[in-house]
Length: 366
Image 1 (cartoon, rainbow, N blue to C red):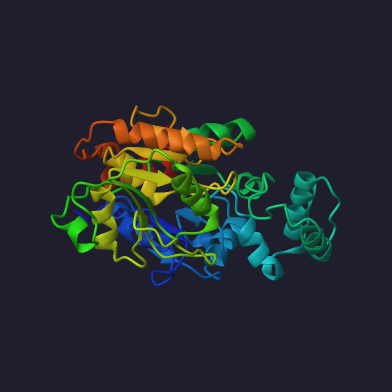
Image 2: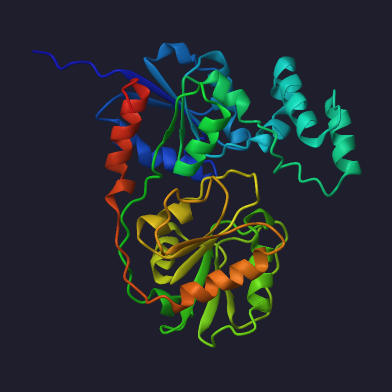
């Protein structure tokens, strides 16, 4: 008796060699899709999404995701929003967008800034005349365009799922835990990076740029007048946006890290600090890895970052004028907390991810 044919699945997103966290995410996901689907990975526009039984579109915030956005426009399907505020994608891909989509983007930006912007040139003039307006973090409801075209929406944050469901009550929006492989502590990690074994290490992970509020973290660190003598701030990753690291022995910067060293430092740190701009809406892989392993964290109090029911070890800070003071208070609290070993939560496993994604793609109930 012949084996039953698995349904086909087209997966759109960045290509395997693209310098993108989503590219690596897709690569890791393929073995966990294999029990459920015959899968083909696609990056560029041109492949007809109607050729597959099911489709999955990974949507991020740059033109590496252009093929996924165009395939979604051609055939509605399930989307996984790695970032829900995708304004930068639309800015970068502008000349590749249909005129109707350009108008839809301009309409949403006009509403967000309170000015009539009928053309790209008018939009650019507005931003040039209003340099205080962060064009990338506008709360312009730009996710409307993808959500309205989708049959089902997946996001990695439970609070973000609730937030988007409030905005889009007719949409099928589901929380999909960010998948994290269980990590094992690596002896000698601190020594390899010149970090004292007995120090209390606060660390922020990933590409280091202003949108991750690194200047705010550094300002709070300098302003922490009663900072314990054994506290160290670790900046783990490549610097972006012209970031300069202060000449301060309590601040360490690793530069580029291999995946293995990055993961080892995640477990070697005592507290992770992962902050974001107010409406960037980015999924944070490092924050998810820290939470999945029971590591204390300090996160921005925004839907994309905030755990719905934060455990005692997860603290959040807002982005008001008190952000620096609140961050210092949070660091004090985490420093005083008894240290505990990492403990992995299987709710974040790739096996669980595969079961959730198969149910979502085939239309099974929540």
